Length: 392
Image 1: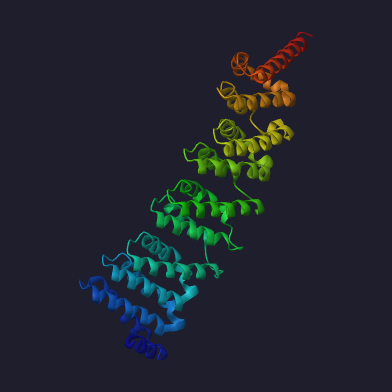
Image 2: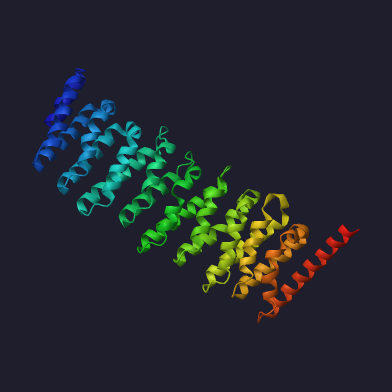
């Protein structure tokens, strides 16, 4: 209180050099004292300095913040808690001016998120809520400068730190003027990894955050789909059922929204979908079937030049050797659709299809045998017509 009153007097007298000298002295005392109570006292004094400065506190943040942020890593939990308290008071006074220092403050909060001391955790959560409010109400927040910092930390395994990050992603996603979709490649893969967390609450929070992001993708005018489909395809083969189900469930709406823009990535998506059609879990099979239907419909109505026929047939050829009937049937239906769409292109690349199609003739499923025979008949007929045209 004495420091606060003294700083207020100096502020009124516009003697900022003296205030700066006080802050420098406190910072040195905080950094160099071996006594925890002295370090705590210095933090209280820095907090009082900010309160005494009031609306001028923002100008002094470059001097006030470094010693307080450094104290967040103090070995004594009482000092760390006091640093939380001091940073809260400074941020409450400086408010919008803190946005210019959000990366340093966020980094400090991230470290505190894994703190094992209950009191420090409580202090961190209060400070965290305040900083989210500061960011969401600010027009000066630079999302592009902030996201790499979040991306660097997204693969953390600590459950409390994961909750902290998901909380920030959800908060930023709720701000209409912030285009979080443009930065999805920075953190989407990390979020999908969190779906397999042992903590149910984290899985639920992550799932909710992903649903919010999926809605934003649906409303976005411009989306970079390549990294998104890459993440989904990767996690479709996850050992964790919830992760696989969520990844497959994203495919149908993303295919519907992307339309022709996803055609360059249709082969890896098709591979992931066909693999999942024979999954032992019904929910996963249903999600894969929805994606399969939407992808097949998209290719059926698209221009053949928009996708690479060779990579699609290569994916199909692998699945035509599947031991599972649902996958075989879907792969055969794809072959029929492609033959109907562009038989000439299929026949040019047919050598990779002949062996697995002939192998299908020995399958116990009558439907598999029927579809394989029909496909082979169409291919032979098409080849004969092609030969006759060249002979003529």
